[in-house]
Length: 379
Image 1 (cartoon, rainbow, N blue to C red):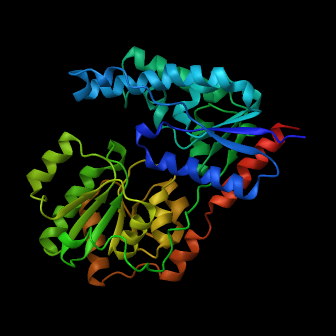
Image 2: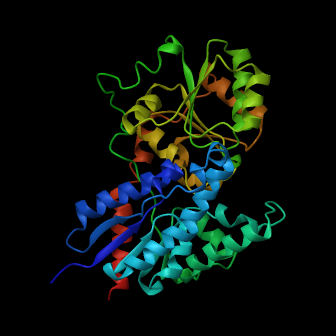
Image 3: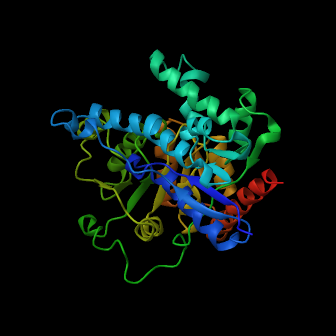
């Protein structure tokens, strides 16, 4: 008797959301490694079709790129799902922003992983995030898809409480499945060091590190202001930013603050390179004002790094007492806390506690929870 087939509906790689790609990859690996007797888990993602982005004028503008993203998400992907749905028994939408796919699937055998509620902010808090009518219509379809799913997974209790407070999903359909730490993120150094050549420009100088996108909720403006303040106190200090693309406003801020020579921006690093940066950094900074979880927190702690994070509930769930907290958006407080740590006037949580906190999170446990949930749906 053949095993049930579980489709993992992933983001288009062309969307370039490393955290979503990581979650899908780790889930697929762990389901194959530890649950192959229960399901045949298979990644499903149709080819990304380029249309407007190929046009001579539009292809060089964000309009053409974003139009192609919209077409693929809302038209081509749903058509591909509808065409192939009979080949699978269960369906797992790895990213809640693709929840409109549930409309093309048997909802009673479909689950969605809700990482946070940012996708739905224009509906839930329209005064804070005003959007045009067509955009809200698209988001309503995505949200209604998630609401149809038989099970909705979430990362933290914070996300669960937000979902319930907004009346989006019944509590009995919510399942917490914390994220994990990949094997590359460990305190032991690797020889040869995979980032040695990348750091030549630093000339051996100490550096602060931020990992993540440049979207507004990451508060990159605060990060840059804090680093500018640190430059006056510690002129030899450097700053490394991994991931994301600077916005025009951020580039203007970098120029205004005179940070061009002290700031180094890397993209497309593999996990071994990222882990090496975590191990080398004097401090890892997480300045976000909103998060669903905080993967960089647990990755950095797993590498033994000292983390300074915004004092918000999801980051406290991730870091516990093993990291240092600073008030959201308070540049003066951030600057003082970082100075205290660098100068030894403040003692960071000890290394053993940092490593122990990271050990609470595993992709194996993440996959086990999700596997059990789909097994229950099949009864």
